Length: 249
Image 1 (cartoon, one colour):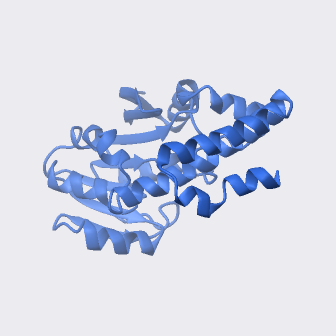
Image 2: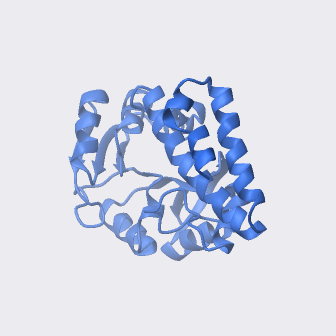
């Protein structure tokens, strides 16, 4: 292995073009995999895959000047914006840096209250995505839900981070009384490597803070248990995008 380490030293890689550097690293990964059992090889390769995914995400944020390029590539904002009417009040829970909250106000004409747990996120939101019709609030929505009625509740890649998801949905519905929910969650069925990682006992979630990732069936079960029904649903980009209303009695 000392020879291999020398071949992929940072100094050597820095002097190579992207394709040649990738060739060097691929050759070493292949050599390691071929020298071990299939299970050991998969454990190594899938762990490497997860680490590379995280690095790719950070690079995509830098390439997008602070905003992950998935916002424009997947166009998931369109799903939310197209289902909100001008003048409606929207509660955006877990708003992050505020890109979606801004679009809901600017493109849909909504009045948005956007809450996030982290003040650091909100500093970025106020600096980059300030809008006259967006109010940013710091708080834990499981405990510090902004008071008042809202026409629409938005959960964009948020629900999967919560332990008691059914209880949370019921409590927000009781407190905010929305007529519609717009929810985006990651799909467990996005790729064959996900169940393989789980089978091998490896971390299989996209984010270690995810409490779950959904199949169509598990999402439907949770929604139903919380008292809602889907009136529109799409599966795109390895995610489930759903519009919910209260289930009919």
